[in-house]
Amino acid sequence: MRVMAIDYGDARTGVAVSDPTGTLAGYTTVIASWKQEIVVEQLLHLIAEHQVDELVLGYPKNMNGTCGDRAAKSEALAALLRERTGLPVTLWDERLTTVDAHRILSENGRRGKKRKQTVDAVAATLILEGYLGFRRGG
Image (cartoon, rainbow, N blue to C red; front, side, top):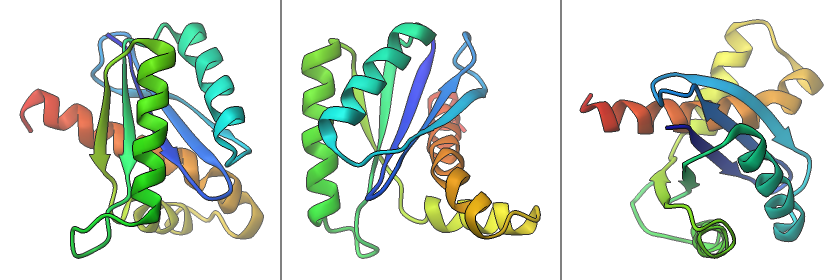
């Protein structure tokens, strides 16, 4: 069972797809758009290409647990993805994943533009790893 994690951002959208067993994060990419219709079309292509069975969408709650504008945009995207794909979509609390992704990339020598181009894919991978761990009971 392949799971796709999505980090829907203001400028780019990170995507990470698990291995066929739904155990490990594998393929990652970045969709260079924030426009919902473009993001959905590219996600549909990736879902078909990687034979995805389940979607996990980052849910950017505020640090105090409340939901703001970004969370509402994720809820709207989740509803659209459910409608267009027929797949289950889980909203996953993504607080601090982008901060952690920047830290990981910085610690590994990625700076400036190179980091900016990959941070969303790393954030999606962190979302995916968190969700897969949760499913395993970890």
